[in-house]
Structures are given as C-alpha cells and as structure tokens.
Length: 418
Image 1 (cartoon, rainbow, N blue to C red):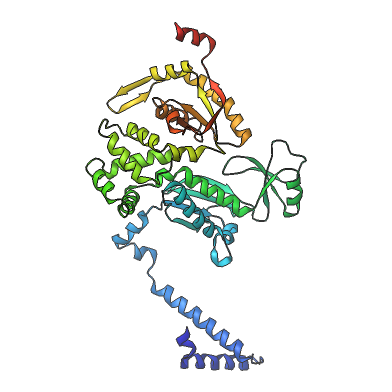
Image 2 (image 1 turned 60 degrees about the horizontal axis):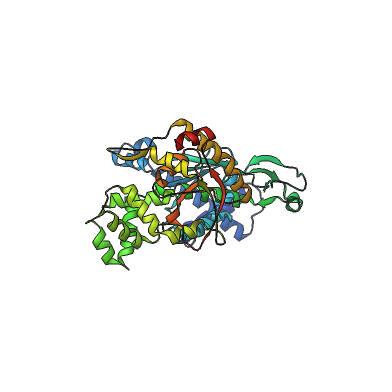
C-alpha cells in the first residue's frame, strides 16, 4: 500500500475521483479525503484480486495432501459466540488471552507441566453468549456469559435478596444470579461474591484444563520434560531411560500423578524413585504409589491449609473389608467390592461431603497405602472432585482433623467380627 501511495497510479486515481465529482456537479472534497477514498478503493480492488486468485474449496481439496490439514486435532480449543469476541480479541481490548498466559505460567510452577496452546475461534453454531471448551476435538464443557452483567454467587445465608437472572456458576456449580452493574454494591453488602464476566469464563476454562491436564500429557510432552531435566541432572536421566523406564511407562506414571492432582515438577525424584521401585515390582500402579510416598512434602503442601488437613477416615473394619475385596488377574490388582458395601460407603460420603462444602475445602479421604489407589478409582466414579490420600503421604508436622468416619452398618460390623 505504501508503494501505491507513491506511485503514478495513485495520482491518476485521485484525478479520476475529481472528474467524477465534477461530472456529478458535486463540490470537490479536500485532498486528504480524496487520498483516503483512493486508498480505500485500491485496497478493495486488491482484496478482490487476491480472493479471485485463491482456488475454490473444491479446487483446493482436489490435492489429496491438502485434505490432511483437516485431520489436525487441537489439544485445547475454545469456541465462542459473537457477543464474546470482544472478551477474547486482543485487538478489541480483550484480556482473556493475557490471563491464560498468566495461568499457564502459574500452573507450570505449581504442577510441573506446561499447558499446550489453546486455539480460540468464534462459531456461528453457538448462541451469541455461549462458549464451548473442547479437549482433543471433543466437547467437555460449555457455558453462557451475559457480558453486560455481573455474576453474583449466592452465600449460604444471604442478608437480603437481590434481583437477577438465576443460573449456576459454570466452574464449581454454585447457585448464582446474573445481576445488573448498578446492583453490584448491594449484592456485596448482602454477602454475595460478585464476579465480572471475563473472570467467570477464565475460571471455567482454567478449571477444565486443570481437570483434564493428564489427558494433555502425551509422549512428546514427556520427552520435553525429560530433555529439560537433562540440563541439570543428566546422570539421573541416563540411569533411568531407557534402562529401567520407557517413555511410554513414564508417561503413564506422570498421568497417574496428574490425574489425582499431584505435581510432577520434581521429575528427578520421580525418576529416582521409579528406578528403585522397579527393582521389586513391574506394576506401574505400585511404582506410582512409591513415588507418591517420596513426594510426601509436595502432596502435603498441595492439600494442607494453614498446617491443618481436614479429612474423612475409614473405620478399621471398613479397611479390612476393602482389603478383602482386592482381586488379581493378568492385568493386575483390582477392587471387586460388593454392591452393599459400596452403597454404604458412597451414601455416608454424600453426607460428609456437605461438611467440606460448608467449609469451602477440598474433600479428602485418608486411607492406608495398601488400598489407596483402588479406593480412589472406585470413588472417582461418584465424586470426581474428591481426593484419596494415604497416611504415608502426609508429613508428621501436619495436624489431621477428621470431619467424619465411614463405618459398617451395625449388623455387618458384628458379622465381620465373627
């Protein structure tokens, strides 16, 4: 365009514009306006020429190599309706991408894994206020944002009622209301937690990424993490890979840890412990359990609050029944628990979960190391946000407070004792 402004064609086009105005009996506008009109017309002509030069979709996909571009699957993808574009588009002042950059850095520091790039794009298939989050091409979450409102999270005992559109906060499922900006101050006085629309969407996206982080850890990411460790501890890597561990097995171990919210930042300790454990077992679940014990300080920091850990414990008879339910086949050990015992545990946990919700704390069940992994997998079907920890994963300087104890029904307790 700069070349065009300096060319003879530009002067010719201005002359043509002047002639057009005179031919129509209109006053000739100032030179600055003529320059702008000539430049705009030239840009439009250039765009038409570029579009004409591009092949049609049918022509483009005649080349079979171009079809392969359709097979690319993004690790994380976010689609959004038209009204949400200003929140995402940096050219329009959108701040979502900047916040995601901060989240990626913080998550890497906390969990030891770098979240892949997120692809953002608008979609005409969605409502104007809707958005969808996809992991590897499949929808895992969706929400709706009212950009001209604030989201007020309802407290357990509000001091007053506030007018608004009833909804549910998308990240944590908290009953909420979309309120007008002029009601924000009154809502806060009544005890509501008021959040701006951008923070609602960013929090939901961040929590979805956290919960699916283990799915985003693939072979290439594992290799990157190992290569990064090589810079500071090449001997550890050389001993472990490939003599004891393949990248595939290391990927499975790291996924096991991330799935249950355990940071993998201390990769050196993870590799060293894995090598030691593999000397006595080839079961990667057991190797992971040994690693968790070695990461006790990390796990304690991750789940402990102010030197205190609030948990639910298992009665000794329940632990015995769970241990008795462990079975083994060629794939490894699994939990074959009877439906009656499972129902008792799940029902009691449902009541105890309310205590954690009232305290605003992460629900945790504390068990022995023997059953931890199997018990955790069973409960994940019913309570995906609950964590199961073992006693050996908690450092001795932490005060453990039990919010409840899961027990057997009276009749079953007597039968178990016989």
